[in-house]
Length: 97
Image (cartoon, rainbow, N blue to C red; front, side, top):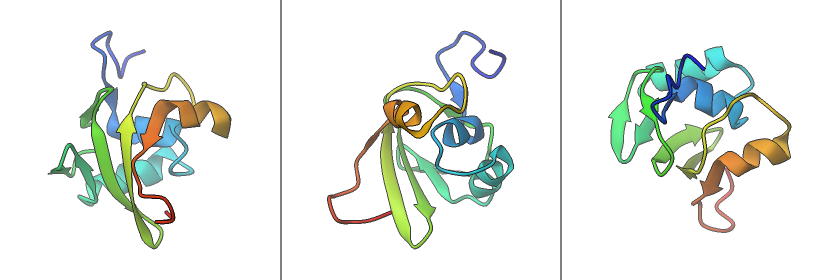
């Protein structure tokens, strides 16, 4: 896969799309490009920022804020149960999002 380049990372926009947080990769790129995503508490405005397993992502989605830990990189945008294996939800119970 060209985004990973065998180095154990993936583009932020592609990962958000594979994990099914956004419907299109273009929307994921726009969210990142607007500076609305933090990787390990550091704000990024680059859709091509590198995401690795273990990273914690914080981003606004709808009326709430999502906090997730990256568990794996996505090879494709699969069904929701498969996408759910890519991350651990760190939102407190009942926080919504």
